[in-house]
Amino acid sequence: MLILLPPSEGKAARGTSSVRRLGFPELDSPREKVLDALVALCHTPQAPGVLGLTEGQAGEVERNRALPAARTLRVADLYTGVLYDNLGLRTLSPEARRRADRRIVIFSGLWGLLRPADRVPPYRLSMGVRLPPMGGLAAFWRPAITAALAPVKGLVVDMRSATYAAAWQPGERSVAVRVLREAGGTRTVVSHMAKATRGAVARSLVESPDRPETPEDLAAMLADLGHRVELGGRRTRGGPRTLDVIVTE
Image 1 (cartoon, rainbow, N blue to C red):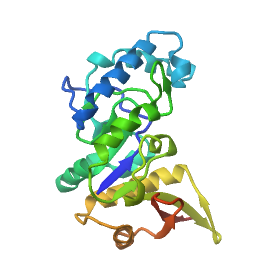
Image 2: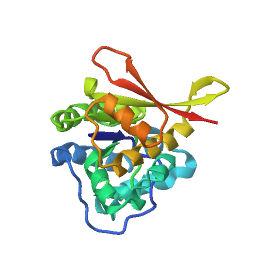
Image 3: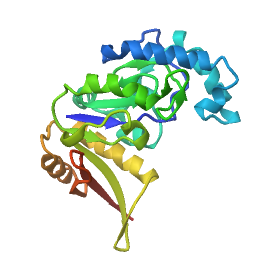
């Protein structure tokens, strides 16, 4: 089973180690190209506009400039924010942490794909950026990510935002998780609460030793773990099944 997550814009302030370690070594060449292009951009006045930064985020440009020699930390400690607070990678048991390292794949505009045990420096680069000279990063990364993940077998639980989902579509073997809020008999799609719920669902999936093989197995497993879920169909031919997680107020 693969659990696909987006990164978060919030990140730890600094790394503590000189060691840089990344999985998916087949992505090393495109990683170097994106890194070189990002550092070059951050030596120009165009960097804040291209990266979508405000005046108060000017320090992100300086941090990106220093990336080649920057100190690193575990990806499990890098990302902050609502989803990762609820996932709580640092508080998992040793067994659950090992499952997280195998099951979770985090999409990144700079690094392509990351595992929780990888070590990288803090950075700022969204998959939605059009980075000179390669252009849109989702389109740039798509061939390499497809080659890296297509051979991986098993169910794919997709909890990425649309920006990161554009870099790879796993097709029929995937389940797209959607969070709905129920209030007064009406259900609506939510955003902020969705991040917290997806983090909680991801934590359930790595805390359990079970490995669901079908969307039906996944829905039954999450229901047994206390989540209220409803399995839907496919919105498009060859696309993912939809799994709605219902939260109430």
